[in-house]
Image 1: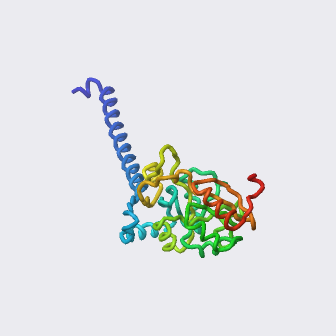
Image 2 (image 1 turned 120 degrees about the horizontal axis):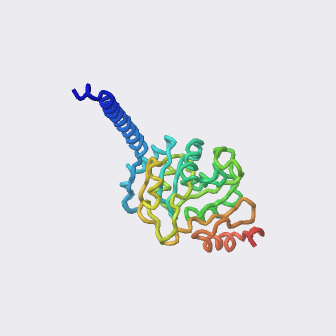
Image 3 (image 1 turned 30 degrees about the vertical axis):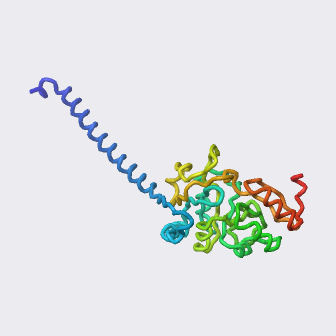
Length: 266
């Protein structure tokens, strides 16, 4: 009877109910797709490694991290200085992914990380003797050398130089050895307010990473990062970044090997 008395009002109410139902369905489906996307995005594995004295328990973490790296993923790892984002340097798409995650300018170079001194000769043209390399590495030092043709041309294509590291961290060294390839490396953390750095400081990046290896806080002078020194010119050195091992590095370069500081730094 109410429909007969006011058919127009009934039509309006029916339209509102129908539209609301459709909107609700649409909203629910949208939420479902959004949730599925978020779940897909948040597949990050946060793996904690025990203290160094329990290295035998690192097997599972190493295996998962190597698998992710070889699949072209980006991971976060502890080093002897600060936490870093790493990928296989020979994988161009993975290198581009690192820049995307960091929101980093494409003309800022990435360093490479290797496990052994001999690996440096594969990817760099070394202008100093091996004893000098062994005096500085493993350690909190990045050596800048001329790159070899073996290194991925898409990694820092704007320069003929490459920074190379062997962190004094057993997990990182073993990771590089297991991968069998150089890892492109850049810092993960962005703040410098305390004397130590921990994995949770860059949690905003975690959803973009395949694996986060939590090695606990890294302290002392690690906030300064590695000392970066250019050794690409025979007989000379140039400090690019003082870092946390400046005095010890200069002592080796000048005191033991008689290298001269590049005039551009004087």
